[in-house]
Length: 128
View (cartoon, rainbow, N blue to C red):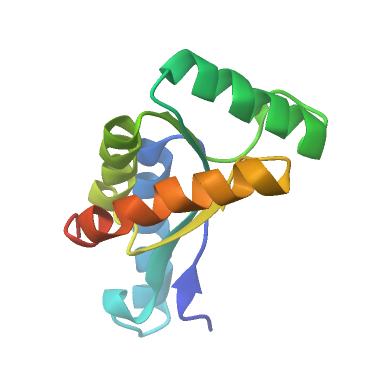
């Protein structure tokens, strides 16, 4: 009945496996595989220091969800190039729309992260 699928598993392989199930369900309902657009909801933290990025996103997850980053939805951290490569794994798994939430708790860091994420958009468009 839907035209989109927005999972948030932490691993691209889970996205690929889930997408197979979605496409099978669509075919079982008489719909073409392309009738359902796969997407990704992912928290992102960009920092040239990959460990600092991971710690910052973990702190964000603990503040927002009350649990460590590893127990939440898809999350990608690292330098801009690392984030682009990691998002590329989700694109390779089938994601066609990416909904990015910056992992930043305050307005100043949100603005910084949005600028860093926006700089990746042209390269993200070439991945699909």
